Image (cartoon, rainbow, N blue to C red; front, side, top):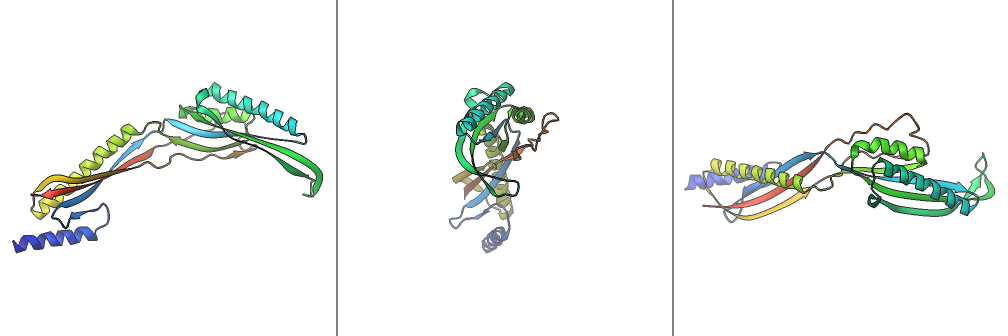
Length: 235
């Protein structure tokens, strides 16, 4: 009996000193372990903000020009496959700006700036390069916030959770075998998910993309991670 208690104490001390998922014997005589499950998924949607900025000494003309170009950009996005319900105006600004000469000195003329941004969701990430190029050709001069994601991560979360539970059970069985104990029923369980933001961010202002065909895109993959913490009673 003394030898068994000593062995349990040594195992608990080693577990507390180790790095990684929490596992060990509880004060109440149970065994608490944590497991991790990771699933790599391909993004199936991409969100991007397309902006149009115009300048003119006449505010009405600045707004009219912006409206015309913004409509062309929106039509270009829809032609690539962006549904009407997946396009939303995210910002619209009108402000004045002092005109300057070639030396940076005030020229005494006010310029009016109109900045209109629409955020779209493209449900075929393979067309992102084409969308970027066509938006620029239509007059977009501010592009940013490219974000790859998964429209419905439920299936990946379920798979990650299954792997996490299996990982936790394997850890618990290892502890039980080493300590010479028998695991009882589960007395407590908790789970958590982590799905980091995925995908590169493209930023384009004025004329940094230019012509030459569709922009090359690498959506890559990203992780859906689940952790589970389980406490087993000891028989």
